[in-house]
Length: 121
Picture 1 (tube, rainbow, N blue to C red):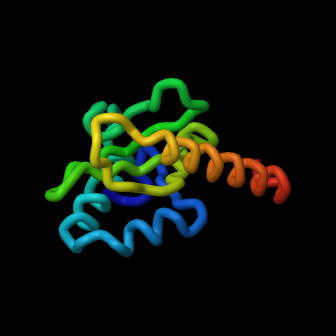
Picture 2: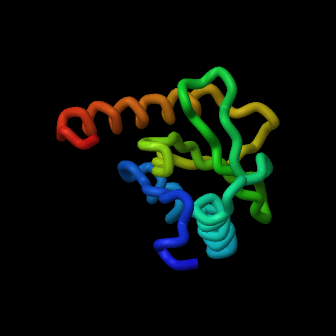
């Protein structure tokens, strides 16, 4: 799919995601890239790949199913079709660790402060 046919755009804020991604195996990296393309390109993303996190202020998780575990990427929307990825982790239990949600909220807050400071709308 070409850039023009994307329904959404995924961007990464800060170094947290890149540091996480660099530690993944080549197979896991390929699954992350595949899932991110899916999020950008299909009109209605199935919950198996993209889900709102309950009891959060606008946080979502991109759900990557890879050999060796479930990878979760936290993100939020900015200006409707722009998805900002904060960071990722490998999920080892049923419940998402509170510290990961708090980290995503903190990165989102930094993004919003920086955006306002720079006058970007």
